[in-house]
Every structure is written in structure tokens, then in C-alpha cells.
Amino acid sequence: MDENTELPKVEISGTPGAQNTSQETSPLSAYYRQPKIYIKLPSKGDFYPEGALDKSEDGTYAVYSMTAKDELMFKTPDALLNGQSTVSVIKSCIPSIVDPWQMPSIDLDAALVAIRIATYGEKMDIDSECPKCKEELRHEYTLTNFLDKLANFQYVKQFQVGDLVFHIRPFTYRETTKKTISRIEQEKIFNVINNDNLSEEEKLDRFGSSFVKITELTVELIADAVHRIDTPNGSETDRAKIKEFILNAENYIFESVNQQLQKMKQTLELKVDQATCDKCQHTFEIAITMDQADFFAARS
Image 1 (cartoon, rainbow, N blue to C red):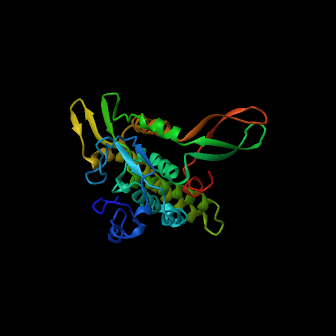
Image 2: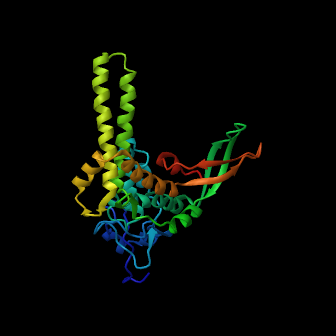
Image 3: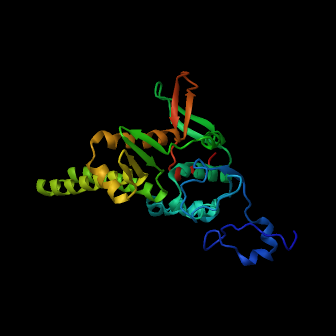
């Protein structure tokens, strides 16, 4: 190897993306990770705040396989819950994404699928049960088909509801974690209802508190996605005022924004279409979940 050759900056230990100075002279340098695949992000590199993405000229980004440390991160429950494990692994395996907390959510599944391909290969086995005959089945799916689909994804940046034009952006990964918090609050409601150690008054009080929290989180999530609203009398870009408007607007306006966001989310869902049962020949659809504990299992 030419001693002047610049080695790729990949995370080995410590700060993600940091250069290991001993790598330059060590005979082990030739065995450090190299990019396994290159991907195009569904966002096309848009929606990232300045400094959050090291944009490439051709729109493709190098993806490295996971290290042993990365795999252990996906086995840490607390880190999975708060999103820290996902952020750490993305920084390690796709160093061009400098701040994964700020990455648009439409890029998240593509990044995770690409990391899995780089680590375990493009084939993935999916276990399921035939809804008709209840036969337990295993299907093989080629994950690169999903990445090819996402490469052609077009994000709808604005849409109209009556006289109003809404300009929207994808949630960031940090904002997406709020959905997890919302689900946890929802679970707390049912736990309170089923807790026989609490009085009816205490149950009602805690139920009310949780319900208010869920409502606030839901409205805040929708408001986070809207960065401008055009009206016949001018435009509004102040986030606090947009949030206040969505909170006080008629329900059909809130639902229109929410449905638009859900529509694009569904377009990006990872799924296997038209799987066929080997036993009864019934055709059905199988969804692939992005639960890291299962999705990043070594089994292919």
C-alpha cells in the first residue's frame, strides 16, 4: 500500500468517524472496514440541517458493515428505546450522516436496511403464518429490491386544504422518538385502569394526565412537520403560531395534514407483496418490521 494513500475515516472506537492515528502505520490497516455498498437516500439529501450530512456529489453514500460494538448496541434495551443505539450504529456505518438525530425519518429505514445488507448480505428470511391454513412459513426476501424502490421516492413538500397551502417536511429521527413516548403514555393509561390498588379518583386523575400528554405529543408531532402555511392574506412560518393554529383549527384540517403524512409513510413501508403459502397456495401480504432486535439478527 502506498504510504501516502489516505485511508477511509471509519469508526473503530471512541468518537464515531474519528481517524485512528495508529492505523496509518499498522500492518493491520489493510484489514479495517471498507464500504460494502453505496446507497441513494430517499430524501435525496434534502431536509438535513447544515452540518448534519456530508453531502456527496453523486448522491450516493458509503455503507460499512457493523462492528461487534455496533451489534451489541442493538441488544441494549434502554438504548433501543431512546434511539441512542440507532444513532450510534448509523454514525458508525454511514459516516456521511454526521448527525443521525437530525436525519429525516424517510431515510431511516433505507439506512437500516443498507446496514443490514452490508453486514449480513442482501437476503433475509421472514417467518410468518398463513392466515388461511395457519401453516408456519419462511420466505426469503431480497432487501436490495426495497432500496431500489426507495431510490425513486419523491417527497410531496406541499399540499392544499381549502384556502390553505401547507408546506411540510419529514420528521427528524429525534422527533420520531416522540412517537415512542406517546405509545408508552398510551400503555400507562391501560395500566392505570387495570390497577386495583388505586382508588377510582386516582385512576381518573392519572388517566386524565396521560390523555392530555398524548394529545399534546400528537399535536406537537404534526406541528413539527409543518414549517409554513400560506393563506390568501400572507404566510406563517412561526412554529409556535403554527402549533397554536393546528391545536385550535377545525378537526378536518388536522386530519388532512395527518393523512398526508401517513400516506407518505405507507409508501415507504418495508413489505413483501403477494407471498404464497406452499401448503394451501393462499396469497397474502407479509410486513417486515424494523424492530432492531429481530431485523439485525445474523440469520439470513
